[in-house]
Length: 346
Image: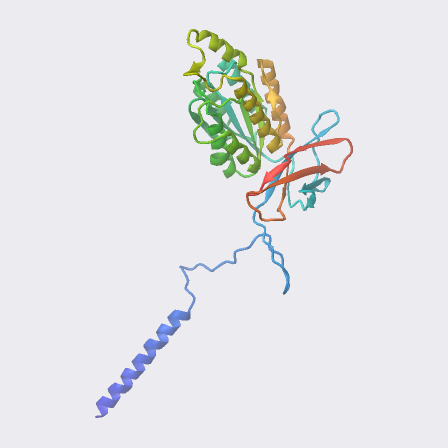
């Protein structure tokens, strides 16, 4: 009998130990290795008291800005407090400021389709000279396009490599995938790069073969992009006219329809597109109808890039996908400010 009692007491004690262990396992914090949990900071959350509204800003809107005097010379040495930034007419607090000394990333995008009126060697040398005018800390990525889009080099400040790639790998083609090239540069490269950045786009603006992107889609992407776009536009109407004459007795018409890229409407569309890229990003469009103009355009763009400021603010609303007006001013007389005038919140 006493053995039965003893066994019963032992069984009850064992059950109590098992229950206690399970409870402890359920309530004890789990640890992985020897790591100590760290507090994860939440950006831009202000301390609030009961009843206050908590607002969390997660998207920094950045605005590249050029400042020039009356003689058209770039003004540098300005500070954050020299600028005022307005969205939809309401002044915003500038929480991010990059002076002109900060590094820059430039996407050099070259149209090498058959309509390129310049000699290919002239294009290559002008592009190489442009890269050499940038500072040692700046980076360049090179893209060319014709019936294909080619990423020749990732962003690098190895200017010997840039020169070698341009001289050896730039080739002419036939048709023109302009919109696809712009789409690739924005979405696959520049959107993944932090800091100051720009696109320098050498083309006549006439797209004949894109199937991934469109003029409308890339203009909207440009409006969302926190970078400048500088189109360098060359006129290919003379080339197309001569090509059409040389096609006789087979005119530039297929089954009654003009070949894409050969009509006046195509060139008007191209002009609107390139002006739109510049206007929506705060860049500038340059004309280059001879080698001298091309070299001067590259030189002017390189100088402006070196003199660029970058302002940042948190938008007052979280209406993703909506376009808003932007205006930037400077606390100095006789100053001209060039910046994008709209932005789409992402």
